[in-house]
Image (cartoon, rainbow, N blue to C red; front, side):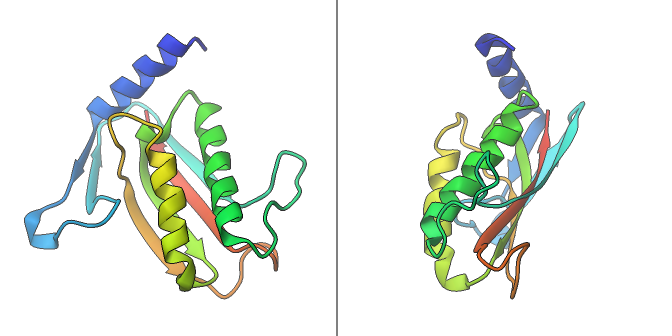
Length: 146
């Protein structure tokens, strides 16, 4: 797919996705309280972990490295269907330790800085006792619209 076609798809998606933060719910940091979408396609992305293309863990015991890899994988998954971060409408984030929240936010902000207009999907973030493997520190599943 040509770059111009990808840009067009991204522009179309942002026109069909409305991010809303009603004043009664307060202004959240880096996400939207409500996301409305009117789209022709809905894309469900399985939970992404810090595995590289060879299936090897990136960043054992290093949350920041794992978070960076997870967002890179999310970007690759979006790219495979002609989408960008601008198409994301919902993230569910699983952290093994909520003390890593600021490192998660830094990785998230870098990822969303790659798209214009800025995207801020609805987000649910939870701390869990275990993920897919014992060394995984973060996992993110996503829904996108195009």
